[in-house]
Length: 87
Image 1: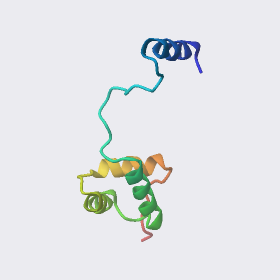
Image 2: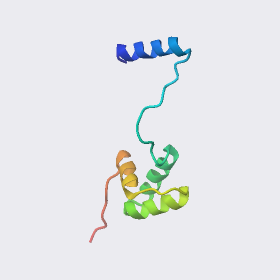
Image 3: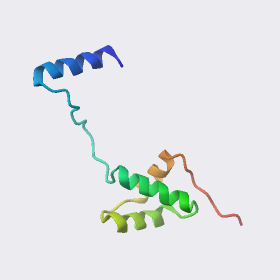
Protein backbone atom coordinates (compact mmCIF):
# COMPACT_ATOMS: atom_id res chain seq x y z
CA UNK A 1 0.00 0.00 0.00
CA UNK A 2 1.44 3.41 -0.88
CA UNK A 3 2.67 5.59 1.97
CA UNK A 4 0.45 8.44 0.86
CA UNK A 5 -2.63 6.23 1.18
CA UNK A 6 -1.62 5.18 4.69
CA UNK A 7 -0.94 8.79 5.62
CA UNK A 8 -4.34 9.88 4.28
CA UNK A 9 -6.14 7.15 6.24
CA UNK A 10 -4.30 7.97 9.48
CA UNK A 11 -4.91 11.70 9.17
CA UNK A 12 -8.59 11.07 8.39
CA UNK A 13 -8.85 8.83 11.46
CA UNK A 14 -7.24 11.48 13.69
CA UNK A 15 -9.51 14.20 12.34
CA UNK A 16 -12.83 12.31 12.41
CA UNK A 17 -12.28 9.62 15.04
CA UNK A 18 -12.95 6.74 12.63
CA UNK A 19 -11.39 5.39 9.49
CA UNK A 20 -14.36 4.13 7.53
CA UNK A 21 -14.02 4.37 3.80
CA UNK A 22 -15.71 7.35 2.26
CA UNK A 23 -17.77 7.04 -0.90
CA UNK A 24 -16.06 7.57 -4.19
CA UNK A 25 -17.57 9.80 -6.84
CA UNK A 26 -19.26 8.34 -9.87
CA UNK A 27 -22.50 6.90 -11.04
CA UNK A 28 -23.66 3.91 -8.96
CA UNK A 29 -24.16 0.61 -10.75
CA UNK A 30 -27.70 -0.36 -11.70
CA UNK A 31 -27.31 -3.92 -10.45
CA UNK A 32 -25.68 -5.03 -7.21
CA UNK A 33 -23.28 -7.94 -6.68
CA UNK A 34 -26.09 -10.44 -6.19
CA UNK A 35 -27.55 -9.46 -9.57
CA UNK A 36 -24.12 -9.78 -11.17
CA UNK A 37 -23.73 -13.30 -9.81
CA UNK A 38 -27.19 -14.18 -11.12
CA UNK A 39 -26.28 -12.90 -14.60
CA UNK A 40 -23.08 -14.96 -14.68
CA UNK A 41 -24.80 -18.08 -13.33
CA UNK A 42 -27.48 -17.89 -16.02
CA UNK A 43 -24.84 -17.26 -18.69
CA UNK A 44 -22.97 -20.41 -17.65
CA UNK A 45 -26.15 -22.48 -17.94
CA UNK A 46 -26.72 -21.54 -21.58
CA UNK A 47 -23.86 -19.75 -23.33
CA UNK A 48 -25.79 -19.25 -26.60
CA UNK A 49 -28.51 -16.87 -25.35
CA UNK A 50 -28.04 -13.28 -26.53
CA UNK A 51 -27.39 -10.43 -24.12
CA UNK A 52 -30.66 -8.74 -25.10
CA UNK A 53 -32.72 -11.81 -24.18
CA UNK A 54 -30.79 -12.27 -20.96
CA UNK A 55 -31.27 -8.56 -20.09
CA UNK A 56 -35.04 -8.94 -20.48
CA UNK A 57 -35.00 -11.96 -18.15
CA UNK A 58 -32.90 -10.19 -15.53
CA UNK A 59 -35.03 -7.03 -15.71
CA UNK A 60 -38.14 -9.09 -15.06
CA UNK A 61 -36.53 -10.91 -12.12
CA UNK A 62 -35.07 -7.91 -10.29
CA UNK A 63 -37.80 -5.40 -11.15
CA UNK A 64 -35.42 -2.76 -12.51
CA UNK A 65 -34.47 -2.04 -16.12
CA UNK A 66 -31.13 -3.58 -17.09
CA UNK A 67 -29.63 -2.95 -20.51
CA UNK A 68 -28.00 -5.57 -22.68
CA UNK A 69 -24.73 -3.62 -22.40
CA UNK A 70 -24.71 -4.14 -18.62
CA UNK A 71 -25.33 -7.86 -19.07
CA UNK A 72 -22.60 -8.11 -21.70
CA UNK A 73 -20.12 -6.23 -19.48
CA UNK A 74 -20.80 -8.48 -16.47
CA UNK A 75 -20.43 -11.62 -18.58
CA UNK A 76 -17.14 -10.37 -20.02
CA UNK A 77 -15.86 -9.45 -16.53
CA UNK A 78 -16.47 -13.08 -15.55
CA UNK A 79 -14.31 -14.24 -18.45
CA UNK A 80 -17.16 -15.54 -20.59
CA UNK A 81 -17.33 -14.38 -24.19
CA UNK A 82 -19.76 -14.74 -27.08
CA UNK A 83 -20.62 -18.10 -28.59
CA UNK A 84 -22.42 -18.99 -31.81
CA UNK A 85 -24.19 -22.22 -32.64
CA UNK A 86 -22.51 -24.33 -35.30
CA UNK A 87 -24.12 -24.10 -38.74
